[in-house]
Length: 215
Ligand SMILES: C[S@@+](CC[C@H](N)C(=O)[O-])C[C@H]1O[C@@H](n2cnc3c(N)ncnc32)[C@H](O)[C@@H]1O
Image (tube, rainbow, N blue to C red; front, side, top):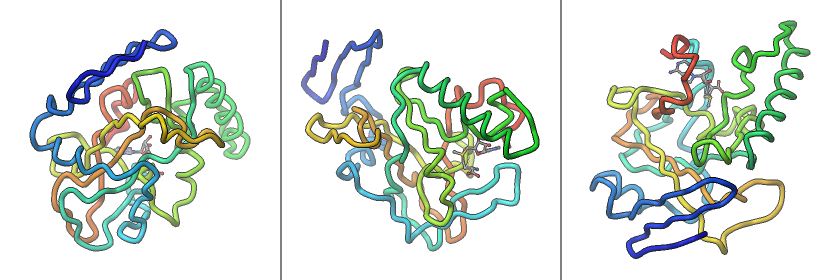
C-alpha cells in the first residue's frame, strides 16, 4: 500500500510497518520554514564550518562551530549505512561488540558497554536504521553523526533534525548508502556563537535504560 494525499501527506504499509506522513502544512510554522529549506538529497555537510574535537566530558568528541552560524544553517544529512531490519541490526551490533571487546581488554557481550550502538539512528520507529559508526570514526571531517545530545528546551540544544522522505527517483544502489526512502536533515535551530558546541535532542528512546549516562 502506498497512498499520497494533497499537501504532502501520505500513508504506506510495507513489511508490517504502517507509515504516516503528515501534511507539510501540519507542522508548526517555525520548524516548517526550516523543513522547506532541506536541500537536494546528497548535499554534503558544510565541513569547513564545523570542527570535531574532544569535549573534555563524558560525551567524548563533539562538533563545534568554527565561526558564528546563523539560525537555519544546513548541517548535512545523517551519513550512515542503511540497515533494513531489526534482525540485521542485532547481528551487526553483536559482531561489533565482539570486535570491540577484543581490542579493548574489556570482555563484554552487553551492547551498552561499548560504542556499538552510539551512531544508530532509527528512521521509522524500529524497522530501518542508519548506522553511522564507520563514518563517525573519521573525526577529521565533520558529519552530523558527530553531534552530541542536549535536552530540547535547554540552551545547549541548538540544532534540529527533520525526517524527509526521499523521492523515488532519487534512490541509488551501491553499498547501502543513501538507499533508504527516508533521510534525516540537520539545521541549526538558533544563532550559534563561534566555538559553541552543536547539539540536538536524540529523543527519549535513545536514552532508554541508560538515562544516568546523559549529561
Ligand atoms: C552519535 S554519538 C555522538 C558523538 C560521540 N560523542 C563521539 O565521540 O563520537 C552518541 C554518543 O555520544 C555520547 N553522548 C552524546 N551526547 C551525550 C550527552 N548529552 N551526555 C552523555 N553522553 C553523550 C554517548 O556516548 C552517545 O552514545
